[in-house]
Length: 326
Ligand SMILES: [Fe+2]
Image 1: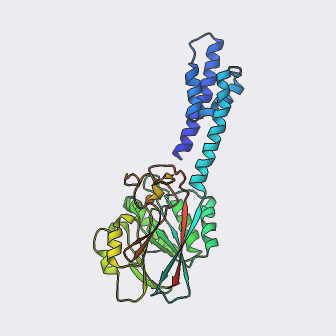
Image 2: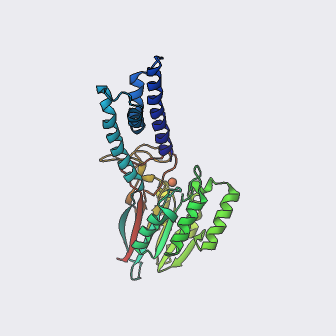
Image 3: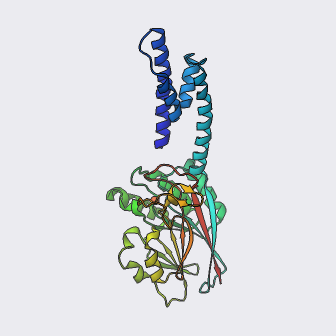
Protein backbone atom coordinates (compact mmCIF):
# COMPACT_ATOMS: atom_id res chain seq x y z
CA UNK A 1 0.00 0.00 0.00
CA UNK A 2 2.90 2.37 0.70
CA UNK A 3 3.87 2.21 -2.96
CA UNK A 4 0.31 2.98 -4.04
CA UNK A 5 0.23 6.02 -1.73
CA UNK A 6 3.60 7.14 -3.08
CA UNK A 7 2.44 6.82 -6.69
CA UNK A 8 -0.77 8.75 -5.99
CA UNK A 9 1.21 11.48 -4.25
CA UNK A 10 4.00 11.86 -6.80
CA UNK A 11 1.58 11.89 -9.75
CA UNK A 12 -0.60 14.52 -8.06
CA UNK A 13 2.51 16.63 -7.37
CA UNK A 14 3.73 16.25 -10.97
CA UNK A 15 0.31 17.19 -12.37
CA UNK A 16 0.11 20.26 -10.11
CA UNK A 17 3.69 21.29 -10.96
CA UNK A 18 2.92 21.41 -14.69
CA UNK A 19 -0.21 23.44 -14.01
CA UNK A 20 1.59 25.87 -11.70
CA UNK A 21 4.45 26.30 -14.16
CA UNK A 22 2.03 27.05 -16.99
CA UNK A 23 0.30 29.66 -14.81
CA UNK A 24 3.63 31.27 -13.92
CA UNK A 25 4.67 31.32 -17.60
CA UNK A 26 1.48 33.20 -18.48
CA UNK A 27 2.08 35.70 -15.65
CA UNK A 28 5.80 36.10 -16.38
CA UNK A 29 6.72 34.90 -12.92
CA UNK A 30 9.57 32.77 -11.59
CA UNK A 31 9.37 29.36 -13.33
CA UNK A 32 9.80 25.80 -12.08
CA UNK A 33 13.07 24.50 -13.60
CA UNK A 34 12.61 22.03 -16.48
CA UNK A 35 14.92 19.59 -14.69
CA UNK A 36 12.44 19.51 -11.76
CA UNK A 37 9.48 18.93 -14.08
CA UNK A 38 11.22 16.04 -15.85
CA UNK A 39 12.63 14.78 -12.53
CA UNK A 40 9.08 14.41 -11.15
CA UNK A 41 8.25 12.23 -14.17
CA UNK A 42 11.42 10.16 -13.66
CA UNK A 43 10.69 9.37 -9.98
CA UNK A 44 7.30 7.84 -10.73
CA UNK A 45 5.10 10.79 -11.70
CA UNK A 46 5.12 10.29 -15.47
CA UNK A 47 1.35 9.76 -15.66
CA UNK A 48 0.62 12.97 -13.73
CA UNK A 49 3.22 14.82 -15.81
CA UNK A 50 1.70 13.64 -19.09
CA UNK A 51 -1.81 14.61 -17.95
CA UNK A 52 -0.41 17.99 -16.89
CA UNK A 53 1.21 18.50 -20.31
CA UNK A 54 -1.99 17.60 -22.17
CA UNK A 55 -4.50 19.41 -19.97
CA UNK A 56 -2.47 22.60 -19.46
CA UNK A 57 -0.99 22.51 -23.02
CA UNK A 58 2.39 22.88 -21.46
CA UNK A 59 5.82 21.79 -22.75
CA UNK A 60 4.20 19.63 -25.41
CA UNK A 61 6.47 20.96 -28.18
CA UNK A 62 9.76 20.85 -26.27
CA UNK A 63 11.88 17.91 -27.52
CA UNK A 64 13.24 16.95 -24.09
CA UNK A 65 9.68 16.51 -22.79
CA UNK A 66 9.12 13.76 -25.38
CA UNK A 67 10.83 11.62 -22.72
CA UNK A 68 7.69 11.85 -20.52
CA UNK A 69 5.52 9.37 -22.51
CA UNK A 70 8.55 7.05 -22.79
CA UNK A 71 9.00 7.24 -19.01
CA UNK A 72 5.30 6.48 -18.59
CA UNK A 73 5.68 3.36 -20.75
CA UNK A 74 8.63 2.19 -18.65
CA UNK A 75 6.74 2.87 -15.42
CA UNK A 76 3.68 0.94 -16.64
CA UNK A 77 5.92 -2.04 -17.45
CA UNK A 78 7.61 -1.81 -14.04
CA UNK A 79 4.24 -1.53 -12.28
CA UNK A 80 2.98 -4.62 -14.14
CA UNK A 81 6.08 -6.55 -13.16
CA UNK A 82 5.73 -5.48 -9.51
CA UNK A 83 2.04 -6.40 -9.40
CA UNK A 84 2.87 -9.80 -10.88
CA UNK A 85 5.69 -10.32 -8.38
CA UNK A 86 3.48 -9.37 -5.44
CA UNK A 87 0.01 -10.65 -6.26
CA UNK A 88 0.35 -13.63 -8.59
CA UNK A 89 0.29 -16.72 -6.38
CA UNK A 90 2.33 -19.72 -7.44
CA UNK A 91 2.06 -23.25 -6.09
CA UNK A 92 5.15 -25.28 -5.24
CA UNK A 93 4.67 -29.02 -4.86
CA UNK A 94 6.88 -31.24 -2.74
CA UNK A 95 6.75 -34.93 -1.96
CA UNK A 96 7.79 -36.36 1.39
CA UNK A 97 8.22 -40.14 1.63
CA UNK A 98 8.57 -41.79 5.01
CA UNK A 99 8.84 -45.45 5.95
CA UNK A 100 6.79 -44.83 9.10
CA UNK A 101 3.86 -43.54 7.08
CA UNK A 102 1.33 -46.29 6.42
CA UNK A 103 -1.61 -44.35 5.02
CA UNK A 104 -2.82 -44.01 1.43
CA UNK A 105 -1.40 -40.55 0.90
CA UNK A 106 -2.04 -37.19 2.48
CA UNK A 107 -1.83 -33.69 1.09
CA UNK A 108 -0.84 -30.79 3.33
CA UNK A 109 -1.27 -27.28 1.97
CA UNK A 110 0.94 -24.78 3.77
CA UNK A 111 0.02 -21.12 4.04
CA UNK A 112 2.55 -18.76 5.60
CA UNK A 113 3.17 -15.07 6.19
CA UNK A 114 -0.04 -13.73 4.74
CA UNK A 115 0.61 -10.44 6.58
CA UNK A 116 -2.89 -9.13 5.85
CA UNK A 117 -2.23 -9.18 2.13
CA UNK A 118 -5.42 -8.66 0.12
CA UNK A 119 -6.13 -11.41 -2.39
CA UNK A 120 -9.54 -10.47 -3.72
CA UNK A 121 -12.98 -10.07 -2.17
CA UNK A 122 -13.22 -12.41 0.84
CA UNK A 123 -9.66 -13.53 -0.04
CA UNK A 124 -11.26 -15.63 -2.75
CA UNK A 125 -8.29 -15.60 -5.14
CA UNK A 126 -6.19 -17.27 -2.43
CA UNK A 127 -8.97 -19.51 -1.13
CA UNK A 128 -9.88 -20.65 -4.64
CA UNK A 129 -6.28 -21.74 -5.19
CA UNK A 130 -6.27 -23.66 -1.90
CA UNK A 131 -9.61 -25.30 -2.69
CA UNK A 132 -8.38 -26.44 -6.11
CA UNK A 133 -5.41 -28.17 -4.47
CA UNK A 134 -7.72 -30.48 -2.49
CA UNK A 135 -5.89 -30.38 0.85
CA UNK A 136 -6.46 -32.92 3.62
CA UNK A 137 -4.87 -30.48 6.08
CA UNK A 138 -4.19 -26.75 5.84
CA UNK A 139 -1.06 -25.87 7.82
CA UNK A 140 -0.71 -22.18 8.68
CA UNK A 141 2.80 -21.33 9.82
CA UNK A 142 2.39 -17.88 11.34
CA UNK A 143 2.24 -14.18 10.53
CA UNK A 144 -1.28 -14.20 9.13
CA UNK A 145 -1.88 -10.94 11.00
CA UNK A 146 0.72 -8.22 10.54
CA UNK A 147 1.60 -6.21 13.64
CA UNK A 148 2.39 -3.05 11.62
CA UNK A 149 -0.63 -2.90 9.32
CA UNK A 150 -2.98 -5.03 11.38
CA UNK A 151 -6.27 -6.08 9.85
CA UNK A 152 -8.13 -8.78 11.78
CA UNK A 153 -11.04 -8.69 9.35
CA UNK A 154 -8.88 -9.85 6.42
CA UNK A 155 -7.29 -12.54 8.58
CA UNK A 156 -10.69 -13.81 9.72
CA UNK A 157 -11.94 -13.91 6.13
CA UNK A 158 -9.00 -16.15 5.26
CA UNK A 159 -9.49 -18.44 8.26
CA UNK A 160 -13.24 -18.68 7.72
CA UNK A 161 -12.80 -19.69 4.08
CA UNK A 162 -9.91 -22.05 4.81
CA UNK A 163 -11.73 -23.83 7.64
CA UNK A 164 -14.59 -24.59 5.22
CA UNK A 165 -12.10 -26.40 2.94
CA UNK A 166 -10.15 -28.63 5.36
CA UNK A 167 -9.02 -28.77 9.01
CA UNK A 168 -6.79 -25.76 9.67
CA UNK A 169 -3.80 -26.12 12.01
CA UNK A 170 -2.25 -22.80 12.95
CA UNK A 171 0.91 -21.75 14.81
CA UNK A 172 1.76 -18.17 15.73
CA UNK A 173 4.57 -16.26 14.06
CA UNK A 174 6.57 -13.40 15.51
CA UNK A 175 3.96 -10.88 14.33
CA UNK A 176 1.05 -12.46 16.20
CA UNK A 177 3.17 -12.26 19.34
CA UNK A 178 3.54 -8.49 18.89
CA UNK A 179 -0.19 -7.75 18.69
CA UNK A 180 -2.07 -5.97 21.48
CA UNK A 181 -3.02 -8.76 23.85
CA UNK A 182 -6.70 -7.83 24.26
CA UNK A 183 -7.28 -7.60 20.49
CA UNK A 184 -5.32 -10.78 19.91
CA UNK A 185 -7.33 -12.69 22.52
CA UNK A 186 -10.56 -11.57 20.86
CA UNK A 187 -9.19 -12.67 17.48
CA UNK A 188 -8.17 -16.08 18.84
CA UNK A 189 -11.61 -16.53 20.39
CA UNK A 190 -13.13 -15.97 16.96
CA UNK A 191 -10.70 -18.51 15.47
CA UNK A 192 -11.79 -21.03 18.09
CA UNK A 193 -15.40 -20.45 17.07
CA UNK A 194 -14.45 -21.07 13.42
CA UNK A 195 -12.87 -24.38 14.42
CA UNK A 196 -9.30 -23.34 13.62
CA UNK A 197 -6.99 -25.65 15.58
CA UNK A 198 -4.31 -23.77 17.46
CA UNK A 199 -2.05 -24.54 20.40
CA UNK A 200 -2.73 -28.24 20.00
CA UNK A 201 0.88 -29.18 20.78
CA UNK A 202 0.73 -32.72 19.44
CA UNK A 203 -2.07 -34.47 17.66
CA UNK A 204 -2.26 -37.79 15.90
CA UNK A 205 -4.39 -37.32 12.83
CA UNK A 206 -4.74 -38.93 9.42
CA UNK A 207 -1.85 -41.30 10.09
CA UNK A 208 0.69 -38.66 11.13
CA UNK A 209 1.90 -37.12 14.35
CA UNK A 210 1.44 -33.38 13.85
CA UNK A 211 3.33 -31.01 16.16
CA UNK A 212 2.69 -27.29 16.48
CA UNK A 213 5.20 -24.85 17.89
CA UNK A 214 4.35 -21.16 18.39
CA UNK A 215 7.18 -18.73 17.75
CA UNK A 216 7.65 -18.09 21.49
CA UNK A 217 8.17 -21.81 22.11
CA UNK A 218 11.12 -22.26 19.78
CA UNK A 219 13.86 -21.19 22.17
CA UNK A 220 12.87 -23.31 25.16
CA UNK A 221 12.69 -27.10 25.38
CA UNK A 222 9.02 -27.42 24.35
CA UNK A 223 9.87 -29.23 21.13
CA UNK A 224 11.83 -31.97 22.87
CA UNK A 225 8.79 -32.61 25.07
CA UNK A 226 6.55 -32.95 22.03
CA UNK A 227 8.64 -35.31 19.91
CA UNK A 228 8.56 -39.04 20.44
CA UNK A 229 11.14 -41.14 18.65
CA UNK A 230 9.37 -44.31 19.87
CA UNK A 231 6.00 -43.53 18.33
CA UNK A 232 6.81 -45.23 15.03
CA UNK A 233 4.77 -42.54 13.25
CA UNK A 234 5.65 -39.85 10.75
CA UNK A 235 6.30 -36.70 12.76
CA UNK A 236 5.63 -33.37 11.08
CA UNK A 237 6.36 -30.07 12.77
CA UNK A 238 4.76 -26.71 12.01
CA UNK A 239 6.89 -23.80 13.17
CA UNK A 240 7.57 -20.27 11.97
CA UNK A 241 11.29 -19.68 11.60
CA UNK A 242 13.90 -21.76 9.77
CA UNK A 243 16.75 -20.44 11.92
CA UNK A 244 16.13 -23.14 14.56
CA UNK A 245 17.00 -25.85 12.05
CA UNK A 246 19.55 -27.44 14.39
CA UNK A 247 16.92 -27.80 17.07
CA UNK A 248 14.52 -29.31 14.56
CA UNK A 249 17.19 -31.77 13.45
CA UNK A 250 18.07 -32.74 17.03
CA UNK A 251 14.40 -33.31 17.84
CA UNK A 252 14.31 -36.06 15.23
CA UNK A 253 11.14 -34.86 13.47
CA UNK A 254 11.02 -36.05 9.89
CA UNK A 255 9.55 -32.98 8.25
CA UNK A 256 9.35 -29.32 9.28
CA UNK A 257 7.24 -26.65 7.59
CA UNK A 258 8.31 -23.06 8.22
CA UNK A 259 8.04 -19.59 6.66
CA UNK A 260 9.22 -16.21 7.96
CA UNK A 261 11.83 -15.51 5.27
CA UNK A 262 9.51 -13.97 2.63
CA UNK A 263 11.85 -15.47 0.01
CA UNK A 264 14.42 -12.78 0.83
CA UNK A 265 12.03 -10.16 -0.75
CA UNK A 266 14.14 -9.89 -3.91
CA UNK A 267 15.41 -13.06 -5.55
CA UNK A 268 18.49 -12.42 -7.66
CA UNK A 269 19.09 -15.23 -10.17
CA UNK A 270 22.24 -17.14 -9.27
CA UNK A 271 22.56 -15.37 -5.91
CA UNK A 272 19.32 -16.14 -4.07
CA UNK A 273 17.10 -14.13 -1.74
CA UNK A 274 18.51 -10.72 -0.89
CA UNK A 275 17.36 -9.93 2.64
CA UNK A 276 15.81 -11.75 5.58
CA UNK A 277 13.28 -10.10 7.96
CA UNK A 278 16.12 -10.14 10.51
CA UNK A 279 18.28 -8.04 8.15
CA UNK A 280 20.65 -10.76 7.06
CA UNK A 281 21.87 -10.40 3.48
CA UNK A 282 21.70 -13.47 1.26
CA UNK A 283 20.49 -15.84 4.00
CA UNK A 284 21.28 -19.51 3.43
CA UNK A 285 17.66 -20.55 3.96
CA UNK A 286 15.10 -18.38 2.19
CA UNK A 287 12.92 -20.89 0.28
CA UNK A 288 12.79 -24.51 -0.82
CA UNK A 289 13.31 -27.95 0.71
CA UNK A 290 16.50 -28.63 2.67
CA UNK A 291 17.81 -31.84 4.16
CA UNK A 292 19.38 -31.28 7.57
CA UNK A 293 20.57 -34.58 9.02
CA UNK A 294 17.53 -36.85 8.81
CA UNK A 295 15.12 -33.93 8.85
CA UNK A 296 13.61 -32.30 5.78
CA UNK A 297 12.77 -28.61 6.20
CA UNK A 298 10.47 -26.84 3.74
CA UNK A 299 10.55 -23.02 3.76
CA UNK A 300 7.58 -21.27 2.25
CA UNK A 301 8.23 -17.86 0.71
CA UNK A 302 4.85 -16.89 2.12
CA UNK A 303 2.24 -14.61 0.61
CA UNK A 304 2.59 -11.10 2.00
CA UNK A 305 5.00 -8.42 3.12
CA UNK A 306 5.69 -6.50 6.28
CA UNK A 307 8.44 -3.88 6.67
CA UNK A 308 9.55 -4.00 3.03
CA UNK A 309 6.36 -3.61 1.02
CA UNK A 310 7.70 -5.08 -2.22
CA UNK A 311 8.73 -8.44 -3.65
CA UNK A 312 10.73 -8.71 -6.84
CA UNK A 313 11.08 -12.03 -8.67
CA UNK A 314 9.67 -13.53 -5.48
CA UNK A 315 6.06 -14.43 -6.13
CA UNK A 316 3.70 -15.24 -3.26
CA UNK A 317 3.75 -18.96 -2.69
CA UNK A 318 1.44 -21.74 -1.58
CA UNK A 319 3.30 -24.92 -0.67
CA UNK A 320 1.81 -28.38 -1.00
CA UNK A 321 3.41 -31.46 0.49
CA UNK A 322 2.24 -34.92 -0.50
CA UNK A 323 3.00 -37.44 2.23
CA UNK A 324 3.59 -40.92 0.86
CA UNK A 325 4.89 -44.34 1.87
CA UNK A 326 8.58 -44.94 1.29
FE1 LIG B 1 6.47 -12.90 8.14
